[in-house]
Image (tube, rainbow, N blue to C red; front, side):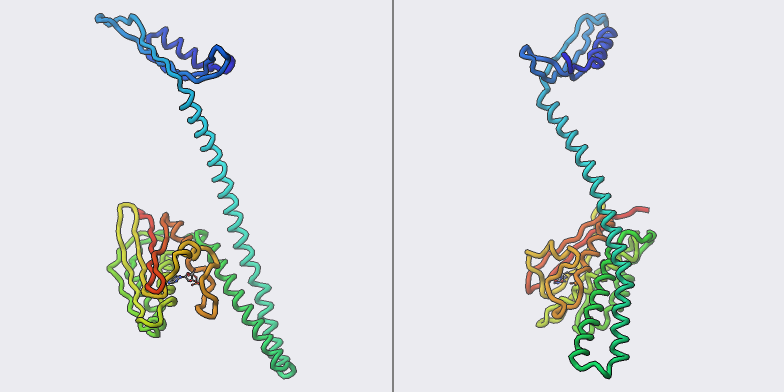
Length: 314
Ligand code: ADP
């Protein structure tokens, strides 16, 4: 028939002339002209003297599985194409975020600096209302600066050329405790740290993740009970799994995914400071390290943030 693969048929012919086993799958035609896929397999059979005398041949209609196989190949190809397109658009998006946040800093500095000048030079002529307006504008500019810095940091994750090193996580946690000593003291918090491993990792992004987790555990503490933060670790064959628990305000199940998206937060800035970038940055870092991050929490009881990182053997 027209679509029958001649080469395959020829291969079968050659094999049979040499008394070799062979299997081919080709398109064949029914009387009605309808195509179907048929699988021929031929095996030579020898007599007791070792001479090949005849064939065992098996013929199967494999149309269904052949079609499924072709569909799968097609699907696979289109998936690969999409994956490539996605990675291109992702890279472009990152480039955009980087350039935008970087370039926005300069005009913002101008706004802030001229507002300051205005206040300094014309402080005597501007009335109270005018001064309040300036203060609002300065405040807005400050927040914008923080957002830009956060965005810059987010787009920088994975761009920085960190080097792999042996990281003692106990040391990192001690540094973090020192960094937050004021918050720990103010909230009468206890920070319990299980013995942690020394691992091969990119130190500063990893420290950033622990720092963000601890910072949140302290920030979102409950007001009626003393704050308790716990750091634990579990080892699996392929990953390290860390858990940062608190007995703070907790999170409604509805927001378990949302909180990891950039600029998504559940409170306004007057309630709790922040821009909603910490968890997004942490997620990006963790995923760059071959891991996952997720939360388990109950409102009013506390939260546990889990994250894994892929073990790197040296
Ligand atoms: P930010 O703290 O700047 O808002 P994050 O990305 O770190 O940004 O957190 C996003 C949101 O997730 C927070 O606004 C808060 O509502 C919630 N969240 C994060 N950590 C905790 C925690 N330990 N307990 C309760 N809520 C939390």
